[in-house]
Length: 207
Image (cartoon, rainbow, N blue to C red):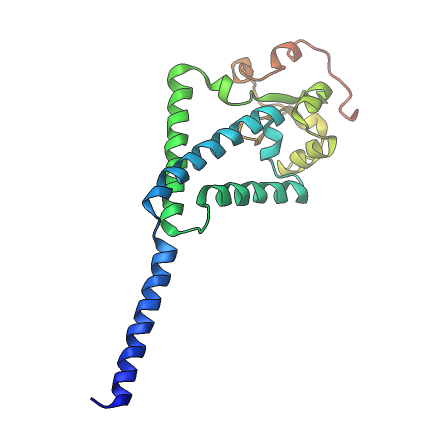
């Protein structure tokens, strides 16, 4: 065989070996790392639940540019912790599967055991009959500007058109328009609703 052909075959073998090595590094996970990835996913999930419980559902909302940055950073930090070094496809799949199993487990726990109030924050009433509930704003770390932003997002142009505004456990803001029939049962699990159903209205423009 000519020297040039031998050199070409060697180059092809080296290129193939290099490709396979890079593919292994990107796709494969060493078996001893598997329980570490699972444990990291479990711990970061529980830590996130505790932080939301402590700081409130407000941290899950995106009312400003800084909120969006924080939410993005949550995902980046959690992903980095779970994947470890080096991040691989297999580690990512294991991490995602662990998070989905945890979500399913806690969903069943909420439904079957009635412990949802221990896991999640209670919904909290932020406005009622056009009046801002100032104590609720402080407890939920919601600002007056956040209230106005939520009203605008709902397509409402007046405080008086808000019958109820609720910060849900998920961080979403629910708004019930004035004039819509409101069954008290809808506010049964909402913190502060029972007291405010009979409370006099406040000035909606008072911060």
